[in-house]
Amino acid sequence: MSPVQEVGEIFAVQRVGAYVQFTVVAPGIAAGFQPGHFVAVAVGGENSSMLLRRAFALYGATPSGDFAGTIQFVVAEHGPGTRWLVQRRVGDVLDLVGPLGTPFPVPSGPAPAVLVGGGYGSAPLIPLAHMLLAAGSPVEMVLGASTAARLFGELVAKRAVGAVTVTTDDGSAGVQGLVTDVLSDAIARVNAEIVYACGPMAMLRAVGNVARKHAIHAQVAVEEAMACGIGVCMTCVLPVRGDDGKSRFVRSCVEGPVFDADRVQWADIGRLPADLVGADAMGGGH
Amino acid sequence: MADMSTTLGWFRLPNPVLTASGCAAAGRELNQFFDVADLGAVVTKSIMSRPRSGRPTPRMAETPSGMLNSIGLQGPGIDSFIANDLAWLAEQGARTVVSIAGGHTDEFVELARRLRGNRAVSMLEVNISCPNVENRGQVFACDAIASSRVIGAVRRAADPAVPVFAKLSPDVTDITLIARACAEAGADGFSLINTLLGMAIDTDTMAPALGGVTGGLSGPAIRPVAVRCVWQVRQAIPYLPILGMGGIKTGLDALQFILAGASAVSVGTAVFGDPNAPMRVLAELEQALDERGFESLAAAVGYAHRPPATRLSPANAGLAAG
Image (cartoon, rainbow over all chains, first blue to last red):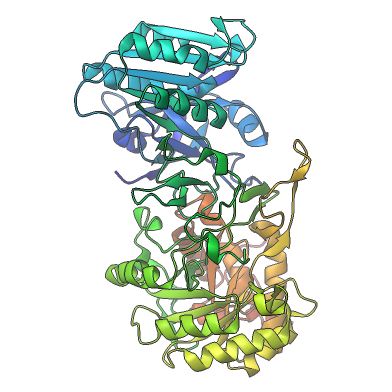
């Protein structure tokens, strides 16, 4: 499914804790949606000095029926681009490119799974949970955040999967602590064969470590700064080990955002390890 | 409708809008949004001899009306490029300008030789904004002698059927001195301009925002610098064609470059924000030429250099006043 560029009207805007949830008319993007896909949104309007799109994991999509298809995504305000975005209202239009990225891989048959969301990283896990449940897989979710207002999707998750464990750093909701403090128990309870996660890099790395102790795979959706989102600019790369055992800088927008946590060379992010393919040829040039 | 065909040396293009090196990879991703064969040509990301990892992240920082990048020419190396990327472009029927980069003159020569006789290649763009490893990392394009040495050597090694364009850096005291040196060495034209060297500091971490510390500034922020460079080089060396680039986002931006003396333009950073930008710029440029009464793109090339008395006034060019 190729991505498309669409200009769509905002159908609904909802404040959810510290976040803003958008529903936008985008039938072309909705038609190709699978959990794990993301959308790249232009910010600032036509004469904006902000050239680059902002990327958001898709929270859901309603394909065309009686109404035109819509997509949903969740925005956290943390700079001028997202500030502009959270000030948009119903009826305003957004310029969108999607669906982008490689979605979460799902087992061919039923397989118990634990889904771990950090902050609004839970957004893409909700449609994934529905998909896994529909395939007959038992699902548990673990949602964590620094504080209660930065949790996303707790009620929706409880309605979808029932078994949800919440953690907060400050204890303002659920268990005080980190998602990894409760992850092992969740894995054991459902006898999980796979873990899915989305959230900050440090959390994804830690989730990968817990999954490895249980000898199961963790498929994690990363957040890396992107300029284009479509695979041409080469800014969003991560060091990832390939099938041949060698590590390369790969694009998190196209090869990702979902990676097997064991393949990501977490300790080498922001570094140039000598054994990376092509590191020996580096001399300069921008 | 204006005749949009143009030439870069003896390379004939049906229209004057190309992608820019490093902003379109090798065309495959953009082909999801439009047919890359409809472009004037695809300009591929600078290729070097060996596979290169590129620099560590962060590689990008957004700046006002622009961005800084420090990718470090990540790429698969010339063998894989020819076998995969060039072959794919040929299958699509896309005209292709191959950008080559090297750390020393011999590397540029080797690349030109490897591409010799390959019918998928319509033109070479020589990216001389690379550090010269034989001269303590001084960028070739900032030194007239080093620039002319590379361009001369590439011209001799390259397929005689393929024009060789020198891509120049604006980070020099007088760009016409570098352009003249390249012209004397046999350049068939110029690509103007490469990014400007810039830097941003993250005020949260209080450290450089880019892993590579400095990076190339691109986007509309650099457009006036680019138009100035095209103007100066056109004036200094009017007989060589120019491929203009630097912050083109709209058809009117492109028209500025054409009027300043460019025969064609590359749309670069705008693609990151709008993957359909090249085809949109082409449609807008065509409309802008029609509105001004130009029967052909060729008639508009360098038009702003004409003495005022010989320029069409907006009224007789059919444009509404105001």
